[in-house]
Length: 302
Image 1 (cartoon, rainbow, N blue to C red):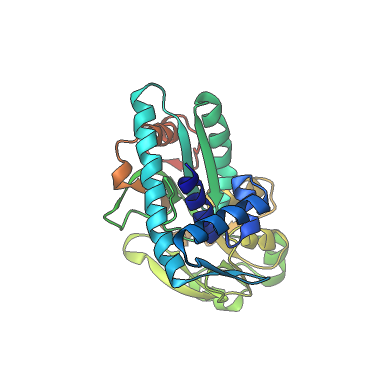
Image 2 (tube, helix red, strand yellow):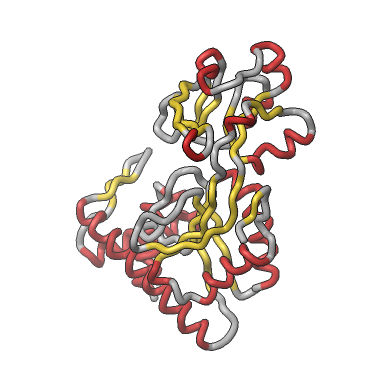
């Protein structure tokens, strides 16, 4: 048990970026995390991390250990879950990752209800806009607005959502209303971008008329919710899933524009590793997503 605890501490330090963050995530005192790491390094006879006052960097031995330890912990959790599921109601922890706005607005309320109905299951919900490495980072389920492209993964279609271009009435009164994508070069655009660039690619039109347009943004952020806040402040136009802005549209704070150029809807999927295809708790979670209406939107998958 001590070996597994030390292994888990090492993996969380690498995932969280430091001892203090790992301690918060594990619910342990930083001194306990430090002691377990020190014991592990003494037992292995090598340094796994190079620590400074600002950051921790994996050594070569640390990188080798992290890869193997992550796989061992995942296999251990899978084994324990399989044993529990043969003895009765499903239980154990589910690690779920989802895009920030989808998770906050749609998934978080569903998860709260899910754990009330299934008290044996614990859920850790990670909300971030980057594409997580599902297997490498130990996630059980990922919600993504894209189909499966990795043969080690499988998924279920959850729902579809329209994509709309919106701006505030104040902005449109000052700058005019664009009629087509070519008009956007004369407008301020608000984009989400994970690379640090002030640009994005927006789709317009459907079927044979569909086309991607490179958009140079006035403002950009790695947080996909900020463009909505900027649009509400009258700073420009942004393209979003309808469920992200439908309340603001209903209140008159945002206005859809270029509706004839609306692109094909985005399809959301629940994705998980192929190796967990027979997991009862994963099947229960995804089944409830599909059947309980926990993430119902403007267009819901049949």
